Length: 66
Image 1 (cartoon, rainbow, N blue to C red):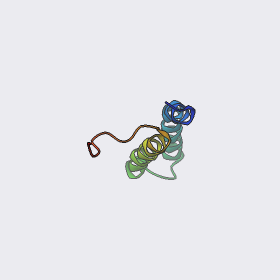
Image 2 (cartoon, rainbow, N blue to C red):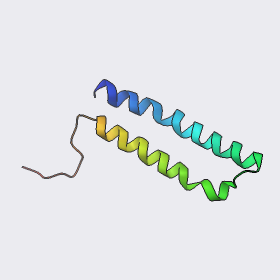
Image 3 (cartoon, rainbow, N blue to C red):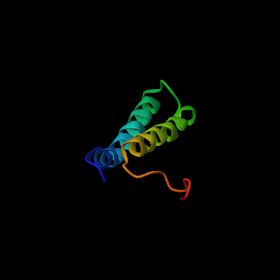
């Protein structure tokens, strides 16, 4: 694995945790209901996974076989 891919994998947890914390803080302050913002967690998780795939040196599984 390249250094960039390892870095992307290492920040996945903290990024998702900070997103959840920010959403709960917004919910507690009364600005936005958590029920309306939970899809943002899925979007952030997907973006981080996409970032990991871009930095990975290996081709995606299930690609064309030779």
